Length: 205
Ligand code: FE
Image 1 (tube, rainbow, N blue to C red):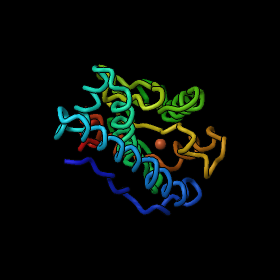
Image 2: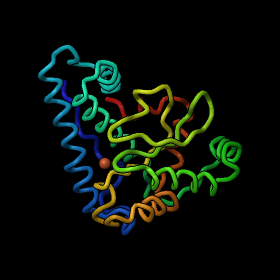
Image 3: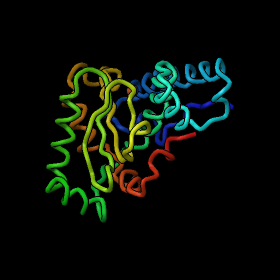
């Protein structure tokens, strides 16, 4: 069994000037594809994980210190999750998610401000996350390929803050990229779905 590059859940040009078709062409078509290819090569070279779920590969590689396998498998999962966190239609959180955001952060705007700060202040490459930690909403960021899959928190939402995520459309202006995503391109329905604690499975294969 080989891992595959999941299709984008929208057209490459669906986001207009927020994220260009060229960004998706490189970010999904080249960067994400490379993580798929490298994960498959590393699994082919070590039959012990042949046929394992991607999430299992990530956990085993993390525990066993298999850095290259962890980095590629985690990036394969992280990107598969990230695409689903984006929506070309502007959405707002509602229902239980909205209530939890208000309770944890005071308001939706305050939560977006905190997540924006986490994403912008994160040094170098990584991912900003909204996670469920023992039933509570929490904002954190992880370095390079690191992923909630390897930790005891459930992923709800992520923003890729590697330079390759924004360089074509925003050059070095990471704050503008994060602001545009948070205000105009987050799939809050997907985030709300992940409150069931099954977010890992939604990008697994
Ligand atoms: Fe990326």
